[in-house]
Amino acid sequence: MTRGRGVARVTALAVVAALGLTACGVPLDDTARPVAGYRAPKPPSTGPFPSETGTRVVVWYVEGDALVSTTVTGPVPVTPEGLLSELAVSPADAQLRTLVVDPQGGAPLASVAPSAPVVSPSANSSVAAVTVQLSDTFSKLAPADQVLLIGQIVLTLTESDNAPILFTDATGATVAVPLPDGRLEAAPVTRNDYLSLTAPGPSPTPTR
Image (cartoon, rainbow, N blue to C red; front, side, top):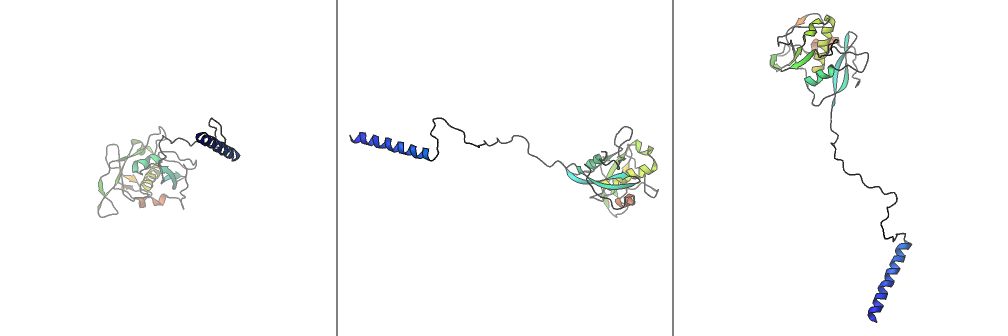
């Protein structure tokens, strides 16, 4: 009799507990029911994480008979080769243009060659110059465009590093490049040689 009373008591307690849960709003269905408004978490992404693909750099374009600066998204890390590649891209602003590409075929008129220590005219010691190789098409440009093209390259490559720039032809021979005052310079040129080409108050407005 004692065992029977114990079972009856447990059964009674289970019924009371069930009634209490029901009163509290907890369903007692035999199968699982989705919780209203529940959203399963998204699975972790297996694709590549976003990474830095560019940085803002200053390049110089032609506007009329002067040079103006603008900022574009350049490659990382910033190198002379990358900057020349940016100069070869037509600017988004229709008032600007670049002379670093052949207007007939679109081929670059300048490329960066291996640098060698040279004596800068503005320094007493040997420094690492940037050597830029000009294509044969350069000599076919109008004199005014030759000056602007050299100015584009020099000002862009020396925006953050005022190293001298040496120009050569396809054979590696030194090219005497024109200065804004009409003189030809066979020695490495510097940023100061072409600052007179800049328009008053150039604005580094992003174009692309």
